[in-house]
Length: 508
Image 1: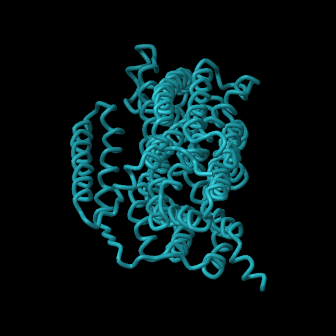
Image 2: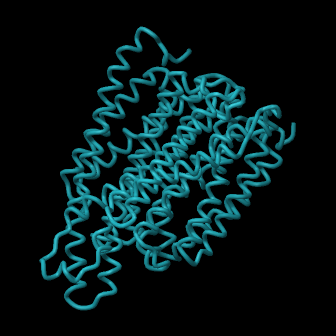
């Protein structure tokens, strides 16, 4: 037997190829957070444009993951993965050469197209490659380690590249990795199952994307209460109507892109929910922490990344519990993770972030570990609740929950931070009359104005905006802990009730 044939038949070699394809997609979900200060100044981006740069990637990907999961089952996971890797590499090149905010936003959309092809196919191939639940649990644990590890490495890699090169390097770094893996995807991966008869209609995917973007635009616009508020109201109402229309059309269609029967399965339904929640919290928390450390406390991108690293390292290596899922149980792990996260975020809401103290380090590790084991249990629940024929669809459902969590986490945390920041920011009446409205929109807008304003006025704006942002982080983290507490109570009740039904029992 040749080396090539031995490699191709090894499920662990296949897993290595899939992880190499997948990690750049995950890294790009978080890496841009470290680039907010230099990117804002270089491209002269507003606070709203910065939020769109951050979340458009995940939001577009979320809208494309369902049709890409169906397309994966239709044409074969191997083919779609290859095209996804190529498109992602081209989009990375375009993003690195962006000269205006809109250029980067459109490049991030193209990155989302490639990423949406890659994400569901990796999980589908894992589902079909590892047949026993024990091996699949280990494989998914490794996948979660690297998926979460990508989120952990993203800020650290971004910080180093920005400090030693520029923010553009965070996109260029993808290209050699993807070029290296293309031959293996093309020639080493086994040909996968395909079903050419599966229906695939792109117009419904576009309908879903438009609906999501309009709802997000509404969430970002309405709280400002300026002249654009009615645009936000109209966009929100239209987006909700389009989401309802998408649901009705797809629910009635005999060839729906969405497998509604699959979603109704308890494992899949709760798995999607508890993929969404940790990613919402993680992306929003990273946005908060990276802005405060760089814009308020003056840390460099690299120092910021090392400060945040314990949270993401714990988040990543929680996947090592994959081998113990059978012994502990899916619901039990979710409840333990929720409880640990609830306590951690409340504790951090009472602390300052100026210095990384022992207790702050402890709660960062505990929060990351708690959210990470929730993700592990959720991933296992989804993929073990699907048949081989629906592996691509199940992978896309998990991926859409993941990306919606990342995108909406940035949106919700960004809007909440802006609202608390605006309510907290106070100036002497004589100073306030000299300031434009945009100073109150976000800390980025306030600091850009302060930098362009000479003398005492600029210094006052800079000082007061930093004080206001520090106050805002406490309110946001308390809100996080309350949301997690509600889910802890709900899932504890679910754990008790499931003893009668055994929906989440793991086969031996």
